Image (tube, rainbow, N blue to C red; front, side, top):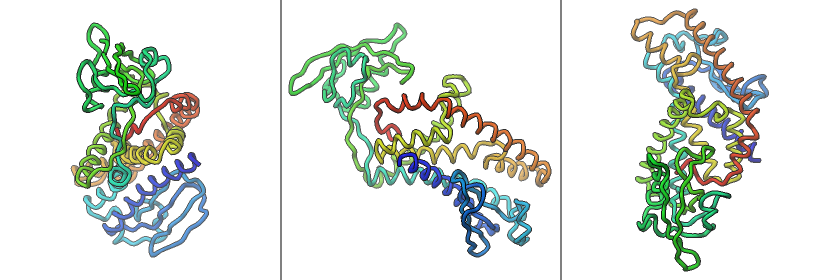
Length: 363
């Protein structure tokens, strides 16, 4: 059920992307003669107006056929609805609409979560103690409450506990932290020296997860929260690529379609909140990646339109076709590598996902 739900969720995000293209194209007077959900052979189709709506065998992907772009457009050719005959601004809007729809969808999911489900707000109660961690060796237990850190009363657990521990690293090593613990009405002190576990974080940790309360936000606060989460997600896409290029993370840390389904399935079984948060994260990431200036992606098409605007004329159909052909070939090669990587590191993700975690996409 988790895998099926994850596949449906990802398919819906792709449908949203293609709906964005279709909606704007129709508003700009561009002919849309097919809207397809899935790829491969048709298993169902129905025409409504000029558009044929089809469902295809393989649930991954989808597409929109626009008048004047695909060779089959001659079947319903209408010069007044030809994509290439429309203004530059209309074509630009149509190209970016898919990515914009994904980013907006992610924002709306974050907004709905914060209004109707609530967002996690950390408290000072320990929910999990990692085996063989400094906290476990010091005797800390699930249910303990951290009252003070380095003599300072805990008011904001995020800043007073997590940030204090993460900032314990100095030029001379990692400094010990003092914790005042409350257990069953009794208070006692513990001194822990954080460690850096490269499998979990690049920052010092003591091996605990804090519990959290779910708090619903007011409309204004929820809107601001959703804007911040959307912005953070966009930044994280670029940060991830930078870390991959610089070697901070390796290819095995990447997740393609299979890996995403695997992670989403685990999040679905963990909680609806985690699953919806992950969908929002994926939707925004999908929108951002599609805007990259790479041939065959929406961003690549957008760059060609910018060049057309600068030159005053298009590069030419043959040149654009070759650019997109090369880009599409490279894209297919990259997808094959990513899918093989997903398969090879399936068990690694199983072990990673088996570790305790919290509502990480909203934190």
